Length: 476
Image 1 (tube, one colour):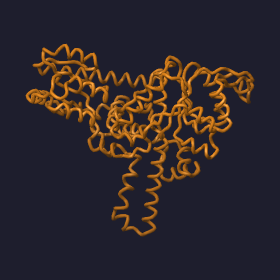
Image 2 (tube, rainbow, N blue to C red):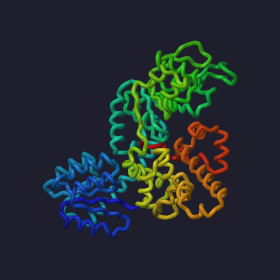
Image 3 (spheres, one colour):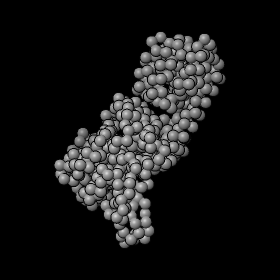
Image 4 (spheres, helix red, strand yellow):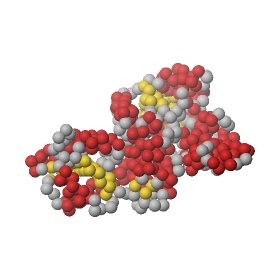
């Protein structure tokens, strides 16, 4: 991957020297500026691997630029350039997150050595992040990525609510990272050393969910040959995360209400009550107040769950985070799939990512990047490698302006357009729900069996839109 380097110094001779040193290497993509305020704007718009900055500059010094950079891109390695008289300040900057410093004047070999060391540090940090995400211990939260106002507000809210014991309801569209937020709340809570237990209420069969949640005793039903501990008991002392809470049945809502109100539960087939010492976090992409109006969700349970509401913004409302997320996923899947030859994302591809509406949110972005990395045959991930919801969407968008469609007989043209629309619609709705066919069917207002039939006809597979094999999500 081409190393993106931003060099900042108010002395143009120093910038000219850096350009001579670094421009010889085709692996380096160098941007230079003598204005630190312009550098700040560039850091807001793009992601850089290395920031080379002078320490003493007018308008904004290197220390403030360091802090600004680290807030937006923690993995960016900052190397300070300083005169002998400001070494103490440079040492202080390393304590604040700078990778290292170099004193002026410096030799070519020294600056190149520092850049290579910084890149090795970045690779190790990324590998460690991926390993932490793969540890399903509940004690490590996946990385939350973003510096948009919406993301900063969300991070502040997480810090505020984490130390409380209040029940939390996380709402937001599919793919926005609700479990990611729940894990981050748990890790920052007083229960961080205990277990985080996630339960996908929408994916669990209705006849099994009660037994899975509360456990059962031997003989409670056919096949119950031994006592089984439930997920509520597994989460004792920790956090129980109930994802897609809007999908649970009315009967289970009653028992869950008792658990929240009294802090007690009974195993299936047992008459004895047990105490539950745990924190509850629930999540849903549905409008629960609408379900209450339809009589599908208990109002008293809603108020028990909705003590604190954390609303997650869709990706289309924080588009400034897209380049940062895309770069993170690109580096992650290059490493996981050993695609060393794929060096960078093209500017056209990145612009396409920025302009796309992302109905499937961060999960869809992660899947698109992973698929692009795997299928890319060149050194640059191009726009055509992204296959946003497959090539169907791009093709169908052009049909209405195509002379070809109007050259067809009316019936053929109509059939062609219907076919293209059907494929595009299926891709959109499946992406929105992360490949969950049941949820896509409900959202579309058609039966699940009929949706499967349409998918077979259009040769659209739900697996294309499911969460990636190595991914744990936004990263929000």
